[in-house]
Length: 364
Image (cartoon, rainbow, N blue to C red; front, side, top):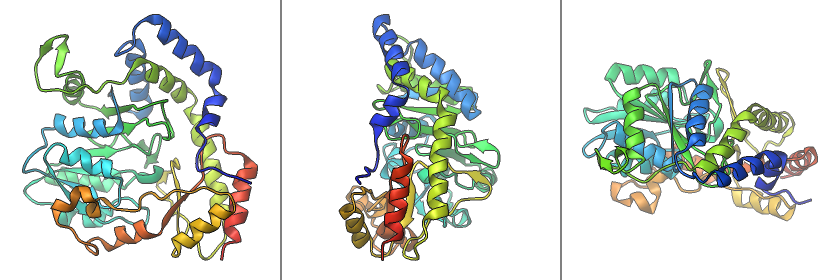
């Protein structure tokens, strides 16, 4: 049997007629950028997250860049960020001229909150919490530290649509929540897309100007801005995804529960789940000592996997100028050496899940 890592076509087929209907409506409307669908999606997504405002932008990376820009964070400022994350988290900081200050992860792959305070300096302006793989970071403790030192909290929610920590959704804890709607995300569009959520009218207003050339009124530019707008077709598609998201979320949780209950192999370390939260399983990440051997074994059996992520940002060529070396963040580097993401996606069939379990259990 062949099991691909992801199958976006199955997600499309499930609500195909609804997608086609709204796309046709947008095309026939003659209005394709910043129209009614964007406005309605922003209202609906803000309500879903539990935030007062939502502003649609072009991508998750743009959401991060515009969030830090709206907060006035730039040169000579420092931002606390998990060392164990995708590089986009860090790019949001450095594209504004600020300096990332890395902190090791905990056993849940998110930032170790016990190691944040020692990294705070007079230059620190914000803590970036990344809810990696679909699981929330310890937001109450992060919020407590931020309040103590008068820091902003920015949430990178690119992988955590609908994830909950102590009764609150990710994207509602910080000063700003940053979301990606890239097609492979749990709530994915059919192209690039992103959004920021916030309870601050000032921040929302600033991001709305930043996304549209720095203007509130066409051709009247108040600040230096960008071209970063969520388009009408993607917003219309996301409204369909949002309507069905409870079902999508439940399906991913069901698959993950089967993996956790039935994968029984001492060579495989399964993910840990916080008791205080609700994981949404953007990725199901296991750890294996002899990773290449494991991947080759699965490939031979027809199972496709991916690595999220093989090179941590502090060791990437992009950040060579920061001067970090191998061994500076040993836990992060150990994760990067051993993590493997196995198939988990919308529309995955029961027999495929069972096959993945059986093949993994036979690995030695």
